[in-house]
Amino acid sequence: QEQLVESGGGLVKPGGSLRLSCEASGFTFRYYYISWIRFAPGRGLEWLSYISGDGNNAKVADSVKGRLTVSRDDAKNSLYLQMSSLRDEDTAVYYCARNDGSPTEAFDLWGQGTMVTVSS
Amino acid sequence: DIQVTQSPSSLSASVGDRVTITCRASQNIGSLLNWYQKKPGKAPKLLIYGTSTLQSWAPSRFSGSGSGTDFTFTISSVQPEDFATYYCQQGYKTPPYSFGQGTKLEI
Image 1 (spheres, rainbow over the protein chains, first blue to last red):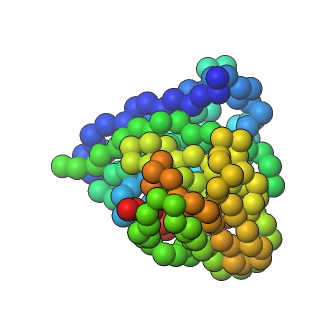
Image 2 (cartoon, each protein chain N blue to C red):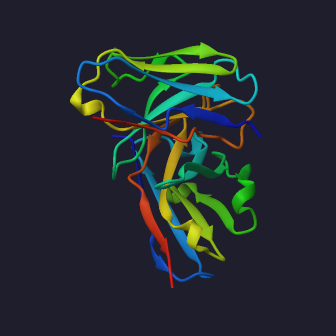
Image 3 (cartoon, helix red, strand yellow):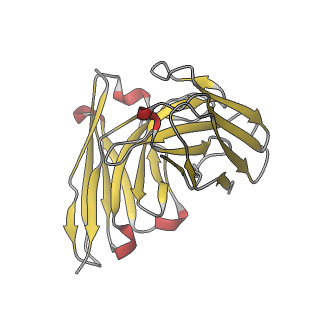
């Protein structure tokens, strides 16, 4: 069964840091780009970052550039999102999602999400 | 960057109704438009990709159409399990991947 499972969310103070993890199973992880996408009520879905299957191509959205870093460890079938200088507006559910590799660039497999709350 | 504008933001319907949601892209994206269903507390699920192709799990009452800048998502006969929020997402000239603002379908 193909699956993505996020972890690492929690409560953090403004200005703090957090590292999220995403573990994949049931498919060949290194074949796929994986993205991080967040959801906040009232703000909807926001794509944040992706990394290629070989780890050599990573992009971050302009809105979070300089504060978020994505990496992956294929030996562990895992993806990571390092977040720093966190702000109130970073409060959201963070999902990892698989890019389907087709021209449509759809996200065909999602994790269950991990909640990040930024508050003093 | 390509922007996608979705309307309406909310929609009231009854079981058996036909409902339509529209998504407009800020530039021509061909047929590279995807639709997702999201229920509270759950991850989004890919419902339609490439404008009109249904995922294997999706019932045939869901459909999508359009091309270029204007796209439509339709539920031909709303069922109780369809009450959710629907998002469109463009897959042209990415990244960034932009999503519509969402349409909440409620009773």
